[in-house]
Picture 1 (cartoon, each protein chain N blue to C red):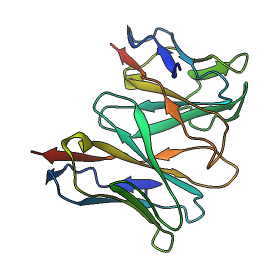
Picture 2 (cartoon, each protein chain N blue to C red; picture 1 turned 180 degrees about the vertical axis):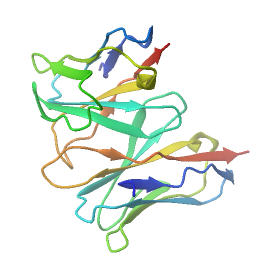
Picture 3 (cartoon, helix red, strand yellow; picture 1 turned 90 degrees about the horizontal axis):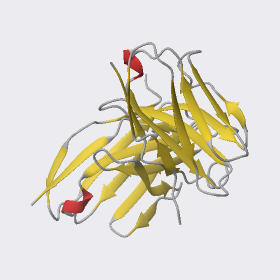
Picture 4 (tube, rainbow over the protein chains, first blue to last red; picture 1 turned 180 degrees about the horizontal axis):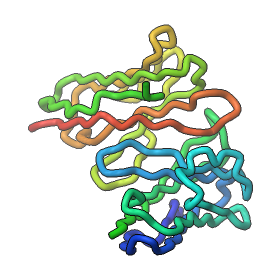
Amino acid sequence: GAGVSQSPSNKVTEKGKDVELRCDPISGHTALYWYRQSLGQGLEFLIYFQGNSAPDKSGLPSDRFSAERTGGSVSTLTIQRTQQEDSAVYLCASSLLAGPGLGRQYFGPGTRLTVT
Amino acid sequence: RKEVEQDPGPFNVPEGATVAFNCTYSNSASQSFFWYRQDCRKEPKLLMSVYSSGNEDGRFTAQLNRASQYISLLIRDSKLSDSATYLCVVIPTSGTYKYIFGTGTRLKVLA
C-alpha cells in the first residue's frame, strides 16, 4: 500500500518568504508527527497531531512555525518569514494509533528545505 | 545534558564482526525505547523495539538497563548492508507521545 508521502521533495526559497510543506499520512493513521533534521543532526520533534488536534506543540521553534491537520488526514507545516537556520529536512511520520507500543512510526521521504 | 545521547562514530568494522552501540537517556521515568535505522539521505525506519527483558531479532539484539539508563544494540555477523546510521529513540514519560531521537551512531561495515 501507499506509504507516507510529502511534497515538495525539495524546496529552495529566499529568506523572508513563507513556505508550506505537505504531508499525506498512511490512510487510517490517526497520529501524525513533524520533525526536522539538520545536516549531521538527529531528528528534532516539532509537533504531534492526534486526529485534527495537536496535544503537543512544544517543539515548534518559534511563532513563525505553525501546522494544521484537516479531516484527520493531510497536514501542512507552514514556516513564515523563513530564515537561513530553517534550512533542514522536514520529516513527517504517521502511526496507526498514538502511544508507546501502539505507535510504530512510518516516515515519509522528507522535504529538503533550503533558505538562501 | 541531552535527553538522549549516542556516540556518533563512525564505527568501522569488518564483515562478520560483532558490534555494539549504547545510548544513554537522562529521564529515569522514560517509558519506551526503540532503535531506528537511517540510510544516507533516506528516512528513518524502525529496526526494533526494546523490551525490558531484552529482545532479539535475527542478528540484532536489543537490551535495556534501567538502573544505568541506557539501551544497547548488538549486531552479530555484520553485513555490508548493515552500514547505516542507527538512531536511538526514547519516549520520555507516560502520557506523551513525543519521541526523542538521538543523533545517531554511524556504522560502516567494510569488505
